[in-house]
Image 1 (cartoon, rainbow, N blue to C red):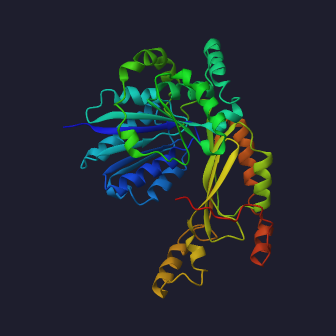
Image 2: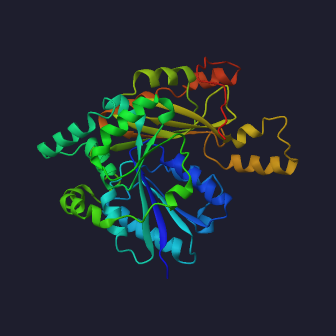
Image 3: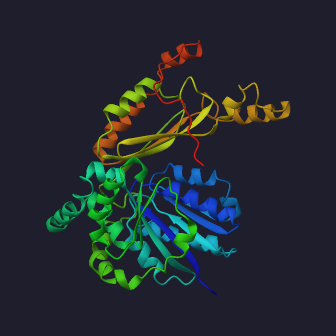
Length: 399
């Protein structure tokens, strides 16, 4: 039987893998192409899995979607879960393509080694996404990445720079993301700075995951011989750090914040401007604010930038809309659903994951928890009180 092509979307935390995956899925759906998807999230809060399932293009019930959370797919346990996921996806289906989105802390070596001799799938493209803004801001336009990587090699240590560099070294497709936020010459300088890590690979710059699926499918299959020596040099070191746990890279940890209370808009704004250090690599999740308490918002932070995205309406918020066009029967069903939920505010709640260096994410997570409304503030708000809200209100729609 002909092997099924598989494309890996790899790259550091917040580089834009989920945005690209959603774009590729939309293209495949438009051409009625049967696609199966595996999404990996290092945190137990499976934000990316929820976002992909929300596209309604793939879902677990259709047996074309598997989410692997609270683990790194590059750890020993993660590889076992990947093997099980592929067996599940291929048991009764023969998709035209499999898309695999890794967690940002995942090292490509174990994945490449596992797929090298897989009997049913062939590795088409290993796409490494690089956050151009992060490299520009934190690594002097990318100029400091290779020297810091070499410094770790000389000292026999492993840091974030090792992971960033090696994700580039293993790929056969290199994407610079968020290039719309920087001048063209800056993006070009970043590309030149990191290209020596993998001089044989073509570099493309894409905004908002705007890459054509045909471009990926036209790439020659992954050349395992090209990275054979790299695997031999690194596998003992990578295997030693690939513990059977969610934190495959010891330098990266995660914390989850869950609460039914909304965030105080002004305190949240102030906290994000004061407490978010360079060691907070990523935070993401769903939240709500008083004053716009019908909106389910997506929090999406990478490095020093934060995006807010309107995902949908909370069910509890829909009931308050005068133009919701719900029948009385539908209203009764929603009220029953909300009554069965544990929170005080129906389905509304804040669920965020913070990923980065342990000390800094602990400080940031603690500061975020202090942004939740106090009981006194909740009572004041429910009596008609209005909080200062500096967050943007204009909604930009992306085609």
